Length: 98
Length: 493
Image: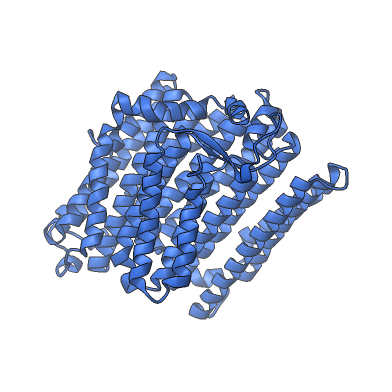
């Protein structure tokens, strides 16, 4: 049940990444996917019993740090793109290619 | 074995040193970066043929159970380290004069070395958690490198690459979480011991997620578009490193390691890889055929080349895996050369459009001549290295009685030949084009780097020698092909 919810959350994020036009919404979609993956790891560790599994905890922490770095990089790129271009809309970017 | 962590320490230390000390002094940054990459190459060559497992902080396994993180130096990872060292050195050598007129060199070198450290880590690690960390390290540095020029096309390509790459990393992350929950350990050797040879459907789910994740990283069909965008927008050294090193080690070698050595291969995975590889060969070759932008054409060609390697891994016999390793090494050399050639053409003429270039052999003899060698190598003309690599794959396919796949691989080779014949005719042999009229040969260090790679392309023709095959590639293939027995070796060592 809980794993199903994680999977649903992952799909919500994937939908955002694939369908949305705004760079910021794409980044949010990615962040939701990352949250779903981390939640999945946390649930695995929790269900392992004994007050949580140390390696799962480590894995979740590492994933959390990597997710932060990725989202920060993505946000920087999006800001730079808007500074160059004046819009967060990915379709606009395509139209003015070259 | 104390030298093994140096493959991570040297580039990281150089990256930090460059950003702290050499920010204002480009010459010092040049020197440090080239020394670091040269050191990587020398270390890799000096360790050729040695084996060993390095347990971080000396935490060796107790009673067959790993308690620490390990780096595994074996015959297959040393091949990757040597290739990475070689390509990294050639690229930094080329960058001394190429990057000079663009943005800050210190930042470029520093990011580049972090990426190389990540790639080396992926080649060496024996632990799935650190594999994930190294993948993210190499990927984040390469996103930033693609965006390096800070123009719109570069930022946009970098953004796309970042999204695709991060989704790939997430697949890997979920796959390794599932693997962990099944095996109770993230050490590849331990996973291999626990899984054994009988795989249940849930193991295959994890394997499928690994294929998807590494597929996104290594740009085989249907995950290839980011590579084309990124290669077009990124500067030539970065595009060369992406195609030559990153997609091969972070994508394919890591995939081979995880699938063969940790999870274990089964019939359906072999078929999946063969099918994806074959489609990739044909799609890449066909798209390269109708592309006028040199860098995009080269990137499509990389998609096709990756297809060959994945096909060979899918066939999965020992000669096929040895052929895949030969292919990784030779592809790294000639594709780097061709991307550096494209960079030189752009440097001298400001254009990468096949329809506008022409007559380069008169205006830029070194670039022209080396690009001919690169193109002959990539089109698999004997006796260049590219020929043997592809020949071995096709022979291995026939030996394994996969005649259909062998036929498709031959068709893909012919299409590649056609696209590079067109490239050579347009760029070198046509009358001097309008954009090339005033072109001059590029600065000397760029030439040295291209000549070095061209010589290696010719030398790679020697890779078929039985001594080389038996000495390096077959033992490496044996490690990958023997699959999960890898585990007992590591834990017992």
